Length: 124
Image 1: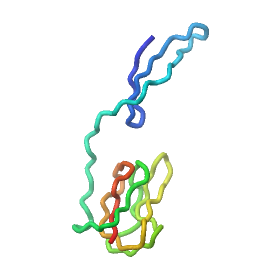
Image 2 (image 1 turned 30 degrees about the horizontal axis):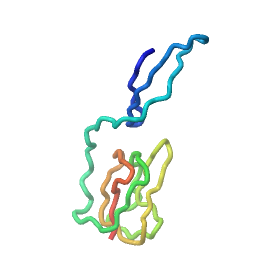
Image 3 (image 1 turned 60 degrees about the horizontal axis):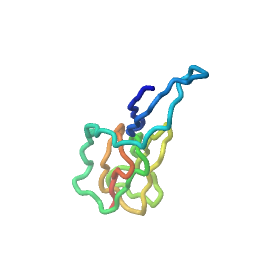
Image 4 (image 1 turned 180 degrees about the horizontal axis):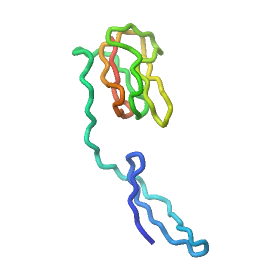
């Protein structure tokens, strides 16, 4: 029997592997509850495109990577318009304006790694 610690998508698992008696293949027991992963160094963020942030936040619904920025500072957007597109699990996911407004700031740059709930842009 061997113990391993495995990290998958930031979750740390303790896994016990036993030798299988009849097949010779290793049998894996159920992993323990995930532990908190060690914190990685914070990613460098791009400077804000505007010094004044708006009061309406445009937040990421999932963790991923900024794939494309669809709107520019000062641009008027309607509710549902794509502001930023993120890539998660090889899918492009548009992050849309929660209501009508004008883009006050873009808080990310293309290629930035982001967490779910991160503020990507603000609107006025």
